[in-house]
Length: 214
Image (cartoon, rainbow, N blue to C red; front, side):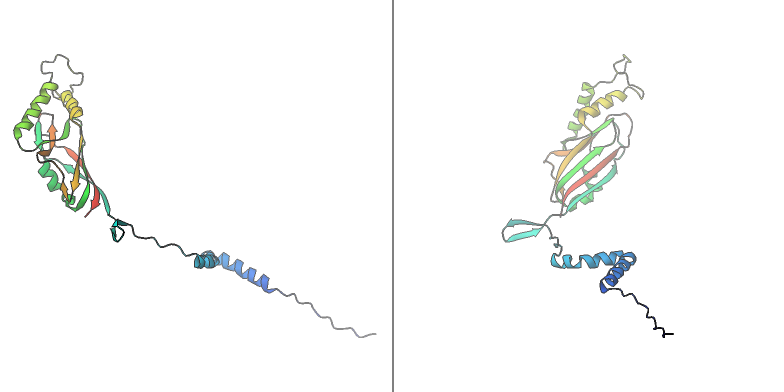
């Protein structure tokens, strides 16, 4: 019998390209973030991201300075209890808001959170002006002390509805410019709190300050 020739097994070979693809798939599965970083590295190297520049303000081609820093904040204030009348509260506002001194150019907004009192800007020197203002408003919006049915809403007394009317006539807020850390009020201007109800009331005011910091 003829001698049998030895049989040789054929071994399959993996191409380098297949090996590279398999390694890439493993890398993607195990480390997706690293894979993406490596993939984008040539693009990021060729086109680097622009570095943000600091904002500047230029008054002339050769004179520039960093742009102003803007500030916004709110602060609730509780007014000292006052009886019916018109009251000057400018000193109280300045004492309660020391932050005003940090604002170069801005605005102070004061909003009273009630419906039977008001805020206003008016005379800051002669107290007779405040007394006359209260008297004038009483004449414009009189109380129905005789119960003639002048107002429907009188749940809390004769001063109830007139207080609401006066509050709408005068207003619930004032805005005052801030210049170099100070309220830019006129020589004879002051911030008034007008109370239209009998008895000593405690009122809340919300102060909002906005502007360019020093």
